[in-house]
Amino acid sequence: MRPDLSMARHLLVIGLLLACSSPAAADPSPQEAIEESLMCYCGCADLTVRVCTCGTAASMRQEIATHLAGGASVEEVLASFVARHGEKILSAPTKEGFNLLAWIMPFAVLLVATAALIVVIRRWETVGSAARAENRANPAADLSDAQRLTLERVEREMREDD
View 1 (cartoon, rainbow, N blue to C red):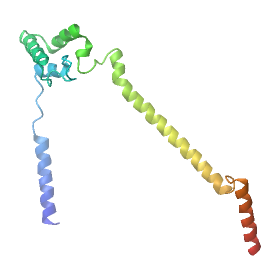
View 2 (cartoon, helix red, strand yellow; view 1 turned 180 degrees about the horizontal axis):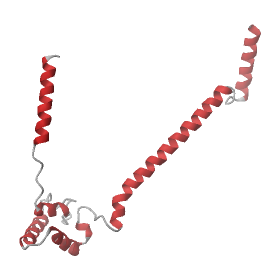
View 3 (cartoon, helix red, strand yellow; view 1 turned 45 degrees about the vertical axis):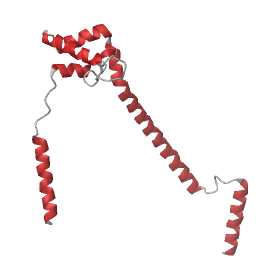
């Protein structure tokens, strides 16, 4: 084994070990979790409160901190914002009721489209192989009358030459 390959393998193993042994990302604080769950309603962009830099997002962050300091849970803070602004304030739809359909439909449509595509491709293959078999059995089947007459004449002349 060449020394440069051996060294590269050792470095790769060491890199993988370091990547696997690194501490997992810390769970976000309740403040950060709520900020990621809420959309800023400022109108300047579709950003979460955590990312948006406008004054509206700053006041929402302050209100979240006030609720949390008062002892409210994450669910209670989110519920208060939803009660005031409706579900559109959430960065992701809830997974219940009609919103569950919004979570499931893209995957269901993708699954149905894939199944339909497989069926169509298999039918094309079946029709194509049947047509090829028919053409091998009767090569003059797809020819026009003029082409068929020419083919017959050529075949007759070839037989006469033999």
